[in-house]
Amino acid sequence: MVKVENLFLLLSVVFGLGILFVNPLFRTPDEVRHFWRSYQVSQGTILPSKSGTVLGGTLPASIVHIEDWQGPKSIIKILADGSTPAHSVLNYKLSSESRESASFPNTALYSPIPYLGSAAGITIGRISDSPIIMGHLGRIFNLMLWIAICYLSIRLIPFGKFTLLVLCLNPVALQQAASFSADVLTLALSVLGVALVARCFTLPHLSTRYLLGMLVVFSLLGLCKQPFVALSLLVLIVPIKQFGTKRRYGIWSTGIIVASLAAALLWIATTNKFFIPTRTDVLIQPSEQLRFVALHPLHFVESLVQTYVHQGLHISEGLSGLLGYGDLAIPAWATALLYVALPISLFTNTIASPLSKYKKTFLLALGALIFCAINLLIYMSWARVGAPLIEGLQGRYFLPLITLLPFFASKGRGWQRLAGFALVATVCLNLVLGLRVLAH
Image (tube, rainbow, N blue to C red; front, top):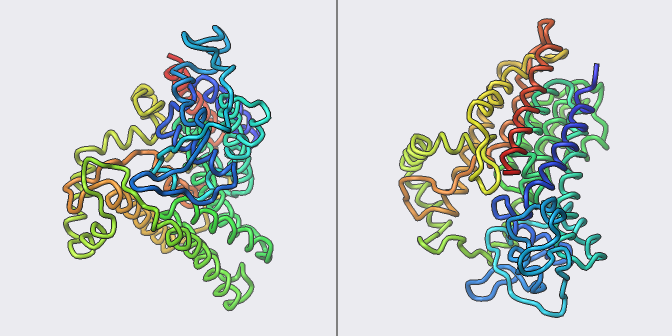
């Protein structure tokens, strides 16, 4: 029987590269701004620059205007006809001497960590002197880093392998992986963190090296997106006996949680002075919004409920079925099959999750905490103070939450092979339809 991680490797490479080359550069949400931040990181620039109401940095003019030259064509179509009406896109050269100020406030405040893969691709791409080639190499390196981390995670996790397969081959997740998005490493590190914690249950003893690895992964996650710092609390579900002594358990569990939180708070403190609201049509005041929520928590709860009453369907579609800028939809019936595949995947295991009901209840509370933190962060950064709805929510923001599902895995009842085949068929169907949607 083919190992789940090897199956993931094959499908992620085939469909990941397919999406990468079929989907035109910068045809995912905010991708050109993620590209600018990646380029900035590739130059060794850690912090953005701020001038008045402009937050971003000074970049080569050819990088700033790359979207105009790339146009709506994918690299496959560019190679097929060789030109746009104005100029051959592939002959568009990098001009380091001519520089312009670029504004990308929604990506400038990200730490360099989520851009390590794409920045490495851009650095190598400079040899070609072509921004278009740099763009595609950045995408390729991001995709390869994603595949490597997810492959390792599926290999390491002792239960819930098919659940991670379905999650990591989600069309929206794979499109993000084949782009410059900062969400790529956020989801990959979330998957790896969960896999490392789950593996703790099957190891006879947790070595110092293993625990240091967990500390590094959760600290890096804290530097990607702050709400997912809470995933470091997963270390609390690991049995004390795995650490050897209560003292060692206390030191390491506290150290991992504090390190992740400290990394996130350090970056927030460093970049707080640079903050400029992304929206200009309404007054955005994050600190005032947080104070309002603290004083009127029931209003926030009402806004949360009303948001999902009015926008819940769209948000759920964005979790698995909306590609491109969010304007290309995979057929709803296929997306529905993918949603059904997730709970089914929990019953395809040879090893069941050893968690007690108490610890599973803790995981549900942790998931609720992260869910509320994501909504609160968007409410603070995208809505006016006291707004009745949480605007700007996208389904893809919640993908890392799904990483908690393997902890609810049950042992299969003898039909794992048939179920596994059905899961893979469902995933492949959605990916084929996704490629078809992107190509047209």
